[in-house]
Amino acid sequence: MGSLPINTMVRAIAVDPGKPQRVYAAGPAGLFRSDDAGLTWEKAGEGLAGEPLAVTLGTPPGAATPPTLFAVLTDGSVWRSLDGATTWQRIEASR
Image (tube, rainbow, N blue to C red):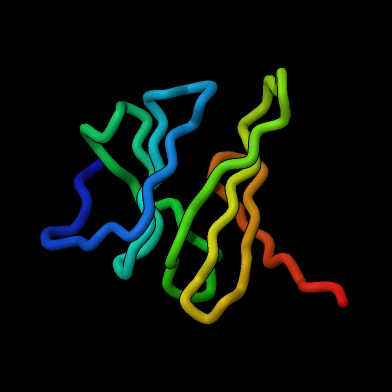
């Protein structure tokens, strides 16, 4: 574990409601995850093809598994992680 890079601009933060000590931060330096309420951070955006603009969580009521994490990149693409930001899949828009 480490810290966020020096002078990191954070555009969005999401807190896991089931594990309040787990926090996600997104910005030009990438996506990061903290499992200790922000004391230490690790890069969590491996697999994202671009710069994160926003990050949010979707949690089904009563869910025991990690919530679905969504990241929006500066190119407008939307990505989803079902495993706490370990892996990511791009969500394709359907028309």
